[in-house]
Length: 123
Image 1 (cartoon, rainbow, N blue to C red):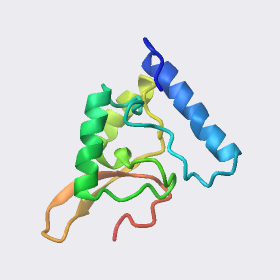
Image 2 (image 1 turned 180 degrees about the vertical axis):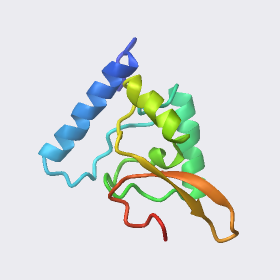
Image 3 (image 1 turned 120 degrees about the vertical axis):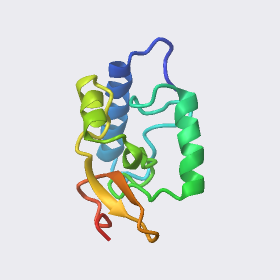
Image 4 (image 1 turned 135 degrees about the vertical axis):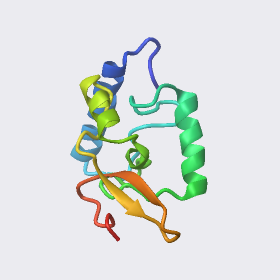
């Protein structure tokens, strides 16, 4: 749970430590880092994160290939400029996120954030 009055940088440090702990324990990245009441630092509030989680479940956002239990919020990152603003402000848990324009079955295009390890990008 997020401590009161925690800065974005403190939250990033705490959640990054949690990710390192999961990896060190050999949990195969199947334990979540964040929680609906403890959002990633790139979100402004718990409500904003909960709203995104609700949307992502109904939209069937693909799982993160690099951290299976963590919601794939990087997919909906607002693009390279927004990502670098978050990195510069100490608010990005996954700074290796890259971006690609994807086309859906109806021909609509969308800028999508993805991990470098995501085999499905470009399909």
